[in-house]
Length: 343
Image (cartoon, rainbow, N blue to C red; front, side, top):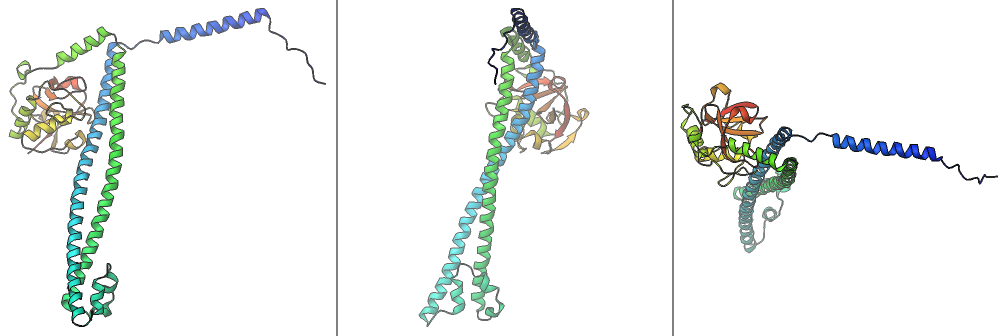
């Protein structure tokens, strides 16, 4: 028979002990949370700089995907134009064959070999050597032209189809990279917002001091550029001082780092590619001691590029919130190598 006795209630002393223990646990947790040190200004700056570096890499990959998209769109357009032209040529060939058939019909009937000319697929007929003797040289030549044009058209349509698929994949990649850039920049902004207004003002002032409004305020020494192209590129970039950094910017109102270097060399009459990952291959790699004004300089595992300006200074588009400026190489990050553009 089941027992129906009420469970024993905890004693008042035990309840008091348990309550006190729980309260102590809550207090300790609260103290631990409040004891977590708030990152100071230098720690926030280091984290923000790292996020900007990561955003720079993601931006370059985004830019690369954009360039690929533009290239694919042009190739697809060219292919589609070519397919249309080839189709017109095929239609002309078939019209010629139709004329030949009409003439034979009026003269007493269509030759069986000419009937095959009107087929959309004459390959099978051509493959049967026994039937070739029935064709005149002119007929055989016409049939072979149709066959060749059909094969060419099929190949071009297949190529266009593959490029369309590649374009769809590239657009998907483009969307992902754009979100990655936005995420990094959003995290950086959130970190900056965690500082006090006074701390943010101090950081902004320090960044402003790093910017230079004109070459007259920077000692570039008297180094000579390695080529007239390097000199012209550096001169073109100097006209863009104080224009803002914008991810994906290629000018003339805003720039990212590789957008500025591409613009500068384009103005010098030399076409270079769009991203740091490809610009590193646009010329000859050189070491720090070999740098001359106008050479490209790469930092932070290809996350950043600028133009060597002389006397250890770099002209570059640094990061979000900054402007095109001169800056000492020693403050930009880890130097990788320079690249000299031959032109």
